[in-house]
Amino acid sequence: MKYFIIVVLTIYVYGAMSLKYVTGAISLQEGLSFMFTGSEGLWVDKYPWTYYVAIAIFGSLSIGFSFGDIENSKTLQIVTSIIRIVVVVCMYGGTIYYWADDGTNKAQLINWST
Image (cartoon, rainbow, N blue to C red):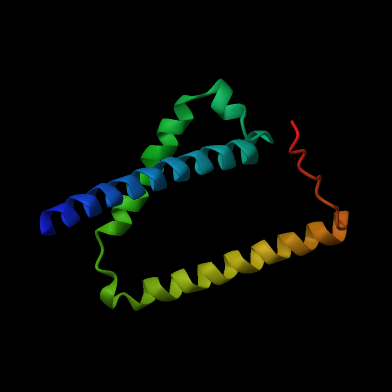
């Protein structure tokens, strides 16, 4: 039973890390594409190699941060907390800005018959 649980947890962790790297790289690729070209999918169609560059950047950053001992790193914890607060404030600020600019719009109903 012990070995079965270890195998299941190993498969789960490997899958979670793979999914993290893939979705992180796709987000990085689409975000940079939108920032530099104004279109999210432009780099996906014209320059598919940018995905591999994005996954290498995201993977190396993730691996680099994984090697540190975060138990006694007060500075890293403070910076991470501040960044989380800034991100939440930006998300709420963007939502309020677009809500004030566009107003509220009723979402389209799903047509279940098709």
